[in-house]
Amino acid sequence: MLSREFDHTNWGYKQLRAAVDAAGVALWSWDINTDTFTMDPHGYELWDVPRGQALTFERLSEKIHPSDRDRVREAFSATKAVKGAYEIDFRTLLNGDVRWISARGHSADIDIDGQAMTGIFIDISGRKHAEEGNELLAGEMSHRVKNLLAIAAALTKMTSRSSSSTEDMSKQLTHRLIALGRAHDLVRPLPGSQGKAALLGDLFTVLLSPYDDDGAFAGRIRVAVPRMGIGEAGATGLALIVHELATNSLKYGALSSEVGTLDISGSQEGDDVSIIWKEHGGPTVTAPLKGDGYGSKLIRQTMEAQFGGEIIYDWPADGLIVTLLVSVDQLST
Image (cartoon, rainbow, N blue to C red; front, side, top):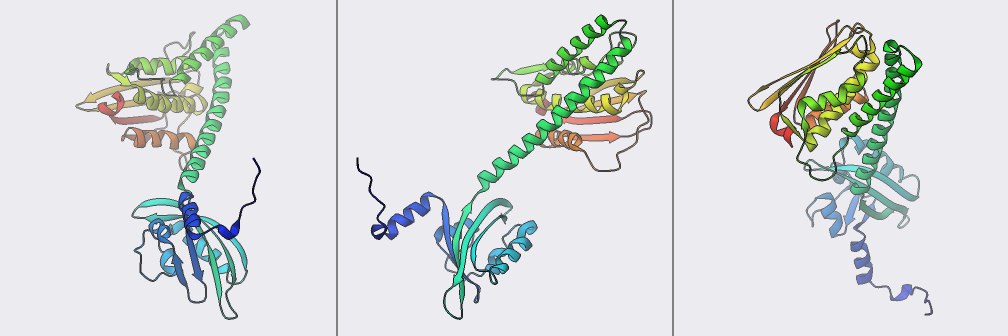
């Protein structure tokens, strides 16, 4: 088959319109001197403005997200002095819905007294949300890798305290690392539909077993919670929270000390469950001077976004106290 060069002379409006619509592109033109803005029908839909009304750049800019508005105005204003290609990504805020828009255009003289800019708008919300998701995932993975390295070092130090020989230390450390692997599996969703993932008490026991000593300090972690089943999603979210709390305790709290202890207690009142994480015997505790770190933000986000619950921190000098408030229904999902 012979290839044929594209014939621009036969390329009509209908074909152009079909191509533009298929690409989800909105066409626009801006007369910079008169501030007159015109768009095709898709542009009006994209900006949620009624058709048939006079438009100006200033009117459209009111729909730009407040955090991006000044930046976009300055960039568009700069085109008055510099002619040529133009591209910028920004957010719009329409009826509480945030969208990402990419504006691409070209500025040129239309006559001796005027200057116009023509271009396209593209809704890039899907791509931006994917990028944000990837950044969040990368940040979480980096955080977890750093935590795992810190945990491995702390577990090695903890194991050395109760080991009588190199062989004994190797055996205990291997046992703890295997237990840590089992606990880490609970921090990710279970495959398929498996109903109730675990009992609440068993969940805490598995997650915290790597941090309990086998020797002189055995029994330093005590768990006393109501007997209740936890669903797959509930187990994953709660495991993430417990894993973060245990990591912080091992690095900075009671589990970092030879004589530190941890008590996990719980009670159920009606449809609500209260779980209290209470540390004793560790380093002196003080409230953080800065805001939440990555781990604390992860815990708070999980409690509020997934469970619709609440997390409360108390900072008495003798040990951290964390209270988790969540409904039974949310844990059972």
